[in-house]
Amino acid sequence: MTDEYTFPDNAAKTAAAAAPEFPPEKMSISMGPSHPSTHGVLRLQMELDGEIVTKADPVVGYLHRGDEKIAENMTYNQFVPYTDRLDYLAPLANNVAYAIAVERLARLEMPPRCQAIRVIISEMARISSHLMGLGAFGIDVGAWTVFLYTFTEREKLYRLFEELTGARFTTSYTRIGGVARDVPEGWPDRVNAFCDQFLPILEETLALLTRNKIFLDRTAGIGVIAKEDAIAYGLTGPNLRGCGVPLDLRKDRPYSGYEQYEFDVPVGARGDCYDRYLCRGEEMRQSVRILKQVLRNFPGGEWYAKDAKRIFAPPKDKILTSMEELIQNFMLVTEGPQMPPGEVYFEAENPKGALGFYIVSKGGGVPWRLKIRSPSFCNLSILPKVCVGAMLADIVSILGSFDFVMGECDR
Image (cartoon, rainbow, N blue to C red; front, side, top):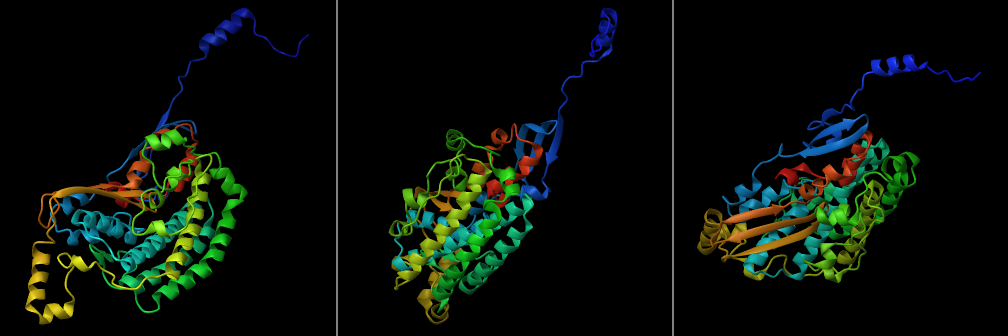
């Protein structure tokens, strides 16, 4: 006798013939564009085999506003506020990148104080953007407390932004040839005080996640990107450095005086969601390190280029009292600053990655062509590769670790 029951030959053949052969069925679903974990109007058209993603196509364009074509129909100065609406989590950094591109076309050199102010606002924007990304990432994987910590610190930065620019969100502070105004009295001291109190809070915030078992299970080994794939797909910023590629434009192609400051470029080892998180955490520490150096040796002098008068609007009091300044202001507003013919490409190390502006000028006050290289768009291009083979629940972690903004992706 045996415990295992066996069909007689005829019965086994009958049972096998009666059992239908079901082909492996796959389900097609849309994640977004109104899903909270897509961080904006991104739609992922996915194909699932059970809980495993077998295909993922990102569908973008829901937030397309035609920024590049708009730029070709307005003066160089008028386009500055539109750059706020690209990566709207770091508008100060967007302004700087665009202004430097036009200044290189106009062959303008910025004085040391202007460069120092631009470094300060760019690093403050980096901290603010990473705090937002970290808080949203925490919510995506179930860590609500992190969100409360990061938004409290971000609010302190917004108060400093408002003191400097008059606005919290869409600042439009940088100008072609300088900045809109000098820093208020006592403002550098308040930035320094923020840095001193921020570092301990940052360490406490990161400690909520770095060795958290649930967070590690949701991020470690998830969304792994090979170094070669990251380069091939054009990833930049923390998403590239998380794969072990130490590319940072502030080091490799310094601008605005970044070569004067000491800071480290954090890189990951495995290229997973956890490494991308660690890179952003370390970048905030390094941004504070840069800010302390700038504030320690904050230069005096002018906050705009002396030879930028053909671009810069004259002071309001002179417009109202001098015919020459009144005419100059009228010409700048109606025709725009007169640029030489030529073309230029400049990209800055923004919080999301390399933000580039390619400008073609035929002379006059309006660009003939303007193209924006948006880091979020390039970073999202690897989603069809990195999502395949992942569990459906892991897609939320992968998207959160990419920290993208659809405003600059769709433009």
